[in-house]
Length: 87
Image (cartoon, rainbow, N blue to C red; front, side, top):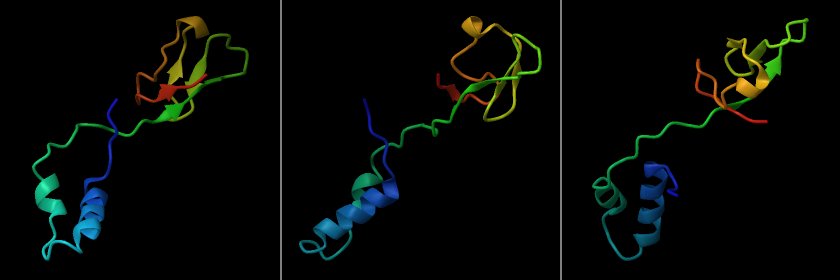
């Protein structure tokens, strides 16, 4: 599994570590040649019961999307905002 890190922070740390050896910063030229990954932050939520007599109405805790499926047929992510649903 890959670890995703901040390019700016990596450049800064490389330059700090190598500043005693090199006169010019080297972090940016080295890391600028590595392609960036296309990632987005993971948003976590949970299905919350509507609680007002509607047996199968659950609401996304992140965006408020209303889902009317039974809990065992429900997706593990919100189809509206993409939040991963935790148990």
